[in-house]
Length: 314
Image (cartoon, rainbow, N blue to C red):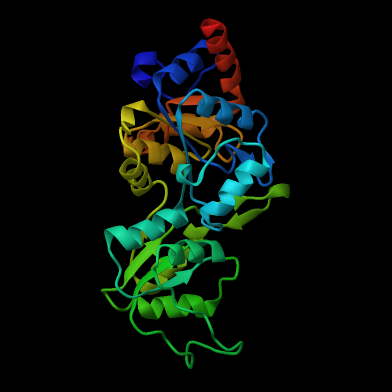
């Protein structure tokens, strides 16, 4: 599709070009943080765009590497911020997809040791996947703490209560070559206000990879598995009819490229167009997978296209 429009290579589009894209695509995949909202505030125009797509019968999905909350909480947040009609089945988080991977793909038979927040644990428990209970004394160390039996997987997500003891325990479990090593995502960091950053799941995974000498299997973006979850639950999902909209080149654009989807970078989040242009001009072929097909300042740029479509139909 990008080649048909003639501007593959992170060119900005607007107006009639966006209208043609909206008419050509049936499936729209959106990242959330930096695309749909910033924290507890919806990005200007985002509610109108999502509501219009749903009202026009388009298939809308939300694909997020944020594993800190269960999908039910996302539904409540969408409603709270003014998004109408977003339901549980439209939301594919890295925590939910990790649960599906453990239950349906590897069919884990044993306990899972989780480095992550309560939201990740809740998704696993809803999928009937047993998790190791954390009940260490405050002064416990790796020298004297008990280790759980029958641990068949270690799953790493975002954990704002990460401790050295958790890292040490996970390293011990992973000495068993039959114990799976999984990560919800490999996001290195997340932006905060005032120029500060929050270390992401990828930074915790990297520490455990060094300690264990093993590489984690990543479930969330840019892995294909999240798209495979969508395709398995909804019929007729054709990659050629999909548009992936995100704000991180190394995550969202690469995810789209890995899955054969057209990609759109919105400049309301982490990555900027100058970075995309550097990847486009790189001599390394592998860097070209980070390049979006299309660029918009914000998804609110969709709104004039909706107005044109309404004028045509009236």
